[in-house]
Length: 123
Image (cartoon, rainbow, N blue to C red):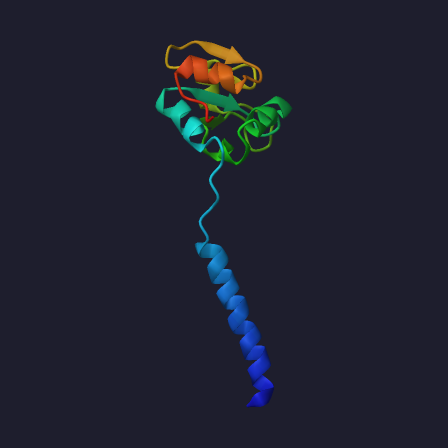
């Protein structure tokens, strides 16, 4: 019985650790509310997974990038464009489209995005 006590205790600790990690709430990003507001105000960010400028745009948002109103335009093999982006006439990445139908291309500053959408940047 004693020879099973240590392995059993280790197993219990491992299971408890995994359960704690799964239940641990994900940390909020500094721009979570701002990124969500962009979508609520009708802004859309078109990009591709292989575009270095799209990666730079997402990097401005840090962990809040997951909340961006992002549309992936590339086929999985990176050689074509998805129909939605073709229909929208997206030819340059990154491209932002706003509710006013105005479009901006390139890496857009957070300040410009705030100005175009009336979303507040965090202090």
